[in-house]
Length: 191
Image (tube, rainbow, N blue to C red; front, top):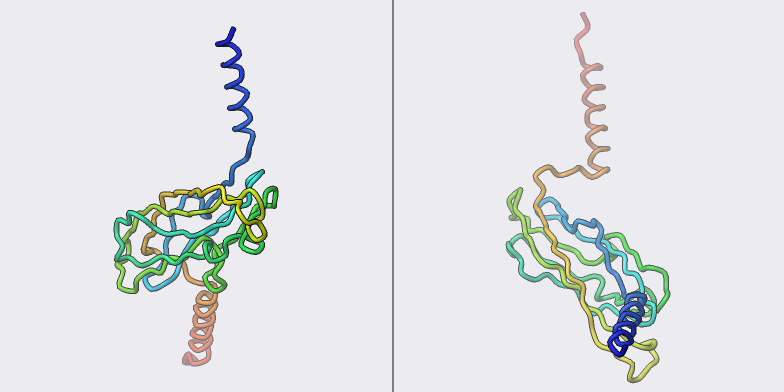
């Protein structure tokens, strides 16, 4: 009988623990694989869902165990922001989502590809995101730190072998081809 009660109690505790929603971080692109031309900047967007009971603040992000650190360097964006409101993601808040935008410093972080990188060069690494957990709003509480946590992703950065032209570059190509066509038609000898 004691064994049954103990088993039932343990099952209830495990179900209750599973019902508590922990923060979840997803990358964009979800594969974690990014690419860019040598000398360019590329990076990751993200979505961070809130915990149901705890306040979360992101401390930093960084790369570890890089297979080719000479390909470039990583710059943390999410750790500088911490969270969507005063550096915090409160319990039950809507998911915090940012697309990668190097000009505004939005997204998880940026990878600056070396201009000396060879096309096809690749850097496999672990992307680590550290966060702190709090039982109350950390901007107003005194002793509410519950500890830390981390998210780990396997990522890959590749120097493009087939770079996609920027939309502005496509317009320049179209204008140039149009000008060449007009020039040829106008200056073509008349029969």
